[in-house]
Amino acid sequence: QQKVQQSPESLTVSEGAMASLNCTFSDGTSNNFRWYRQHSAKGLEVLVSIFSDGEKEEGRFTAHLNRANLHVSLHIREPQPSDSAVYLCAPSLDSGGSNAKLTFGKGTKLSVKS
Amino acid sequence: DTTVKQNPRYKLARVGKPVNLICSQTMNHDTMYWYQKKPNQAPKLLLFYYDKILNREADTFEKFQSSRPNNSFCSLYIGSAGLEYSAMYLCASSRGQGATGQLYFGEGSKLTVL
Image (cartoon, rainbow over the protein chains, first blue to last red):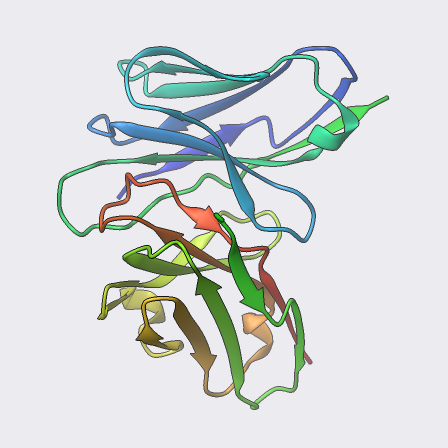
């Protein structure tokens, strides 16, 4: 069963400083990685999807994937107070079947101070 | 419209009473999911429908029921709520049956059991 660890548990950054979040996963066959975020008492929204090693940028959000190291990270450029939320990492394996088990990490709580 | 709607947004229930949560989407997605999210914990998949086929997780098999009367609607039913059911319940939908499709989440239904 996939195990997902996120670090740090919480992170406080100043507005405009880069925020970096980390995620390690246990299943080296994972081939789909998404970062979601959840604002307080809200649903989850997807930020970045990455499927191969390297980098994927979506606006101010950049994901870095290194499957050999079982590691995927999220970097937020010029974070704003509105980016304060819980960020969730979700690695999964597309096996072509009906397995819809998307495994999430516990999340990193990001606070951006103005 | 990529909106997934959930009702009610907030639900207060007494121990032992039933709870019914509703989810709808108009994206004609094949798959609809229910997750349970507690503070500082990863979202936990409870069950999902692929078309008319219901899949329930083994450890929550007897605690949650669901129905999908048509493609757009999916409900989550708790027959007898316990204190441990207090959580945010997140509905999501995706195209296709695999975990690789992007999940679109609703804003959640926050259940408090007293």
